[in-house]
Length: 160
Image (cartoon, rainbow, N blue to C red):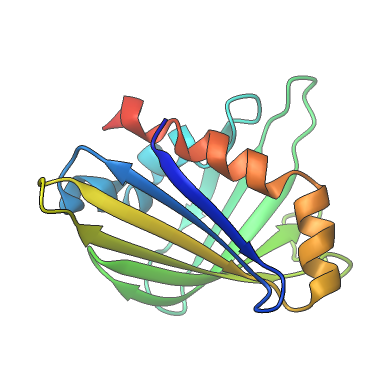
């Protein structure tokens, strides 16, 4: 498995997942930049993602849905805040309703992705999720966010 660490900090209201890959930084960056590669790993294995819109520029938006084993299709969206290819990305991440519109009843998080080169030629990826409140952190983690993200990230090696 590529995930090397999961750190939850309730006081800072963050969860950081760190993973390492035996691939150069440019190839790992493609996992975010290419919507067809992104959809091959963004959803956990039992909830594969389909990327509908993918505008990975500051101010751009990404929309997607995941298809569960029984056909349920939860939707999500990103609002891209910053892009520093191939080293980083920051975006707001939220749940969407069936029409793909942001769901105001669910929390919105901010995700910062940092890619760095390892001395071995591989790449370290850190994904920090910042929650708006302790209650939002508890709610999203109770929904299985940690398990979902770690299982999703574990699919990247097979794509690289």
